[in-house]
Image (cartoon, rainbow, N blue to C red):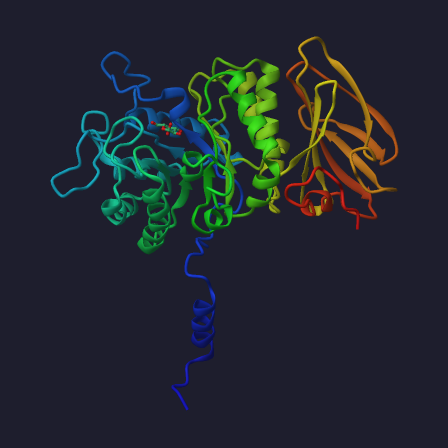
Length: 434
Ligand code: GLA
């Protein structure tokens, strides 16, 4: 007979042997991460002499942390303050460690992490698997992966975005899983955002979403967002055109990332801003704002702080939604299944003429027969009323705008989300009613 182990230990050992060694399972990002990230709005502005207020410096991140903590953001879930590119010195230090630019981050990253933590927030940082970062700062070559993970953990960092400029497909295939192991080995909980798929075209066979979900908490699939409606539309088109591949890849702990929210900047109208927020919510996307929280307008803030929208984005089931209708009239309908048999519907207009009266029914949108829903308009905030599946209804959708509904069942024989769950990859949208 072998050694007798205490039963708890034996069980733990048996489990450890049974689990695949790659599984990330760091228990983080059970819902899509929320917070603020510097890149889209503040880029690689390193000229603190000419532009002290907007340059990439500890001051900028401290000010954003203050705003997140004091202006109602943190309570809504916006908790990450994420440093993007251009934070570091142009060279590693004598010990080969990454170090912040001494002029722009005189107190160091550890002090910044302390500042952020003292306000109940978390700190994210950026690195790049390759010779250089995309902005030309020192990269993380394979031989530095372990050391950099340890540096970030020692600084008290809570999230890492690992970009992929200046590396080969082979280096990425090695380096991204290696960083996952290195982060886990530090013992510090660090959310891990991988840009790997974005560098490999975002689609199989080059991208393996099963492996990604095992090593990364979120991943950039596609191009960088820019401050324009065209950019938002190109991202939306790509994500929903490829929803058969992307939608099943998302879930608690592992999310597709269509990139930052640009609401509050210069490129989007009011309607377009509401559309970005709604479409990112349907995609179960991370809500990482890249805007100046010191000067944001009340209307942009209201969109970003919509409680019900955030509740939908953060739904604990973590099922990504799908586009379920594309009308010739340039109206599109999106459905996201939610917990407690609720759902979110987004009616989106790509029209450029005038508010469009769109008439449909829940039956046409594949909801189960004989159900009754209480409908709430997410932006208007009001209960629209009770709706039977068979009832026709009309929504008025502004050009490049949305109407967003939250539907709770009052009487329900079946849930609509089998429609999304049972979607066979590669096929059109055919609801498989149970
Ligand atoms: C890449 C990333 C962006 C940003 C820049 C920084 O383009 O996709 O999100 O991090 O690099 O240089």
